Length: 602
Image (cartoon, rainbow, N blue to C red; front, top):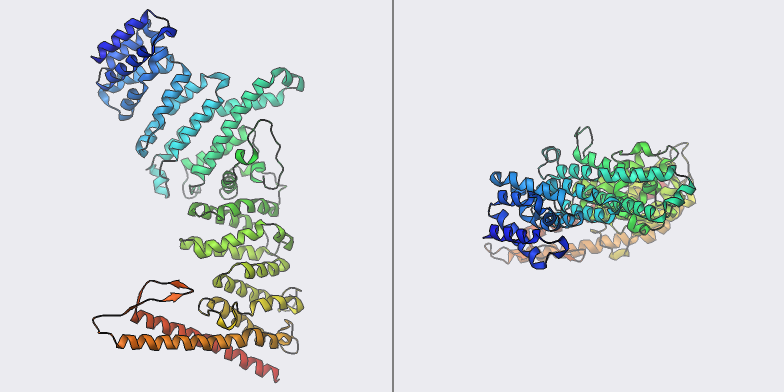
């Protein structure tokens, strides 16, 4: 029935010109032709399609047969494959490019990852041929195609291990390779246009006309948009393997090709990476700067260059390591501000790579006037305290220490003050105080004297360290790290600094420290101990009053946050631990009192 309908409409249309075909003719041809292919009559359809008398009909309506043809080709049904492939190839040669483009793009849309990979592998080459047939007006169609392709690629799972990439278990590697081959002729064309334009004299450029230049710029714009989108996904999501880990990496090759594409269309890789500090030339007719150069894409590019050393040979040696760090801080700040672990990891890697090439003590205090040099440490604190992954929290701490080591003494001093004011986390404050102790110890070594970590300059920093956030009512368990490091620093100072020398100024400041830190701390310890001893007594009484079979379940709050219910045994253990902590604080307090009394009486 369908074959008869197809034959009838073809026979009727043979006598008509292509502009005389009715809507009904189109519908009958489309429905009957698709049904024939679905029912297995593709050999008969091939005969009709190849008939010389039907070429005008095929040119006008043939593209409607694409959906069932592509389904057969994707399923690789052997008995239907050969005639369907022949029909498909003939349609590509005969049908109008614009209609073919629409039909092919419609069939590109898939949801299943396996089907996506097969669909891209099948259709990218035909799409390339169709686009090349559009001549100089292909730019917008190319942009639409690339956008659709990348939307499909974004649905594919990402390989995380060396083995997954080697085996291409998710077919992403094949898709990226196919995509690279797909864009090559368009990149080559854009590069030739650029080279020709550079070679032309001014008079020749004027004769070439605005229209030609506009079309060339449109092509470059679409390739730039594609490259920027690719840098954001999948490249920013992927963890590329180094050559030592994986000698042949399709994904690393893909990243290299994207950077080559940028260079080929006239984009300077150094200028893109250093965009935050370099004024870029505005090109009339192009997209607005931040749309044209998305910040996340530029951060991904910086990571590829500085961490994986792609396109490193394009960077002139005149750029200093400090200049590179200043530029990269914008990218690092962006990556570390994200919550996605892949971005956090790349931010940490980029920061570490930017720092390791600097000498210790080489960064001046002036850099702390640049916003990113203060924002990045804040983001690092969030990573160290809130990131779910232990390895990233640990790496964040390592990078924080590396950044501290690169500051000179004045910058360290200012940085410590800033961190004590802004971190609002006892563990981080304790770590900063430990670093302050290291700097003071260094300054007290013979021949290492400096103006920032001894004498009058040191005192404002010491006053900030040797204080309780909420006076005697400070939650000593919540602020334990800070309190213990502050006590350890004070104990170190009274042991290391002689009363007669008073290099740190601690001995003239001690009476103030007694009033603002030591006395409130003693009161706080006594109040906290009394409170927890009462809690322990009440809990033990409650436990004794319960029947053994009905074990008490109690609720505990720490830092105003309610913890999951605890058994009475667990709560008793927690209360004993808290009381032990107060004993530890008190023992250090007593030791400091003993040291000060002995030294003052000498």
